[in-house]
Length: 124
Image 1 (cartoon, helix red, strand yellow):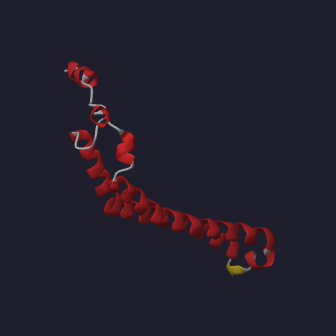
Image 2: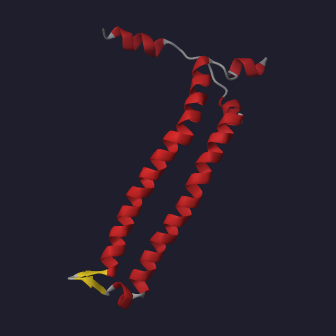
Image 3: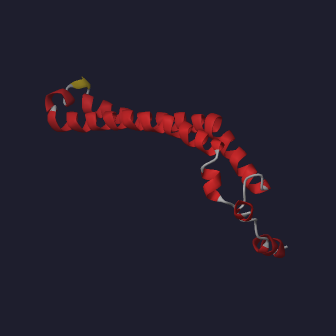
């Protein structure tokens, strides 16, 4: 019952040469795909965020323009910031599930099965 967990902890996995994994073609492909998505989206989100902050700080007349009732442009743009956050998160999760996770699983499976170089094999 409780001994299963103890026996799992005492089993030692073979040592893995993580530098070899990091330098592998699969890992480089994973890192490249991740960066190709994250950096442009991050840049666009930062521009959108700073535009909102600058408008709020310096364009009082524009931001206080009423849209309907007591709702003005500033409130709508602020809500758009929240919507953008959820949209980008959803977009990234879908992208990761489709493009990143299969490669990461492949790398993990290679490590777990010992298909990549271990530290012992690298010293031979």
